Amino acid sequence: MKFDISLLIAHLGGTICLADALGVGRGVPHGWVRRDFISSRYLSKIKEVYPDLDLNRYFVKERNGHLTGSTRIQ
Image 1 (spheres, rainbow, N blue to C red):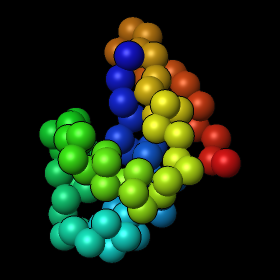
Image 2: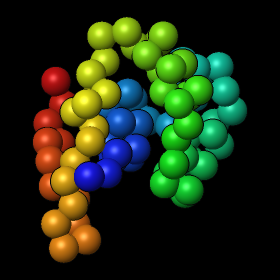
Image 3: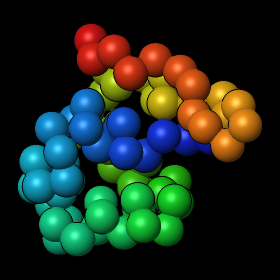
């Protein structure tokens, strides 16, 4: 199982919109994607700004090195 950071960012309006909403530099979300890692500190901050966001939907299964899961924006 993997957390799809790129999908999360896309659903929240893209890197610039998300960075502005969180009050962080615009390079911060790019760093999450580049490192394939997002800390619990930033996940908590995202939940503060988007309290109804279901983070569980961004956990996707990997099959043969490819991600599977919902990409539908709700």
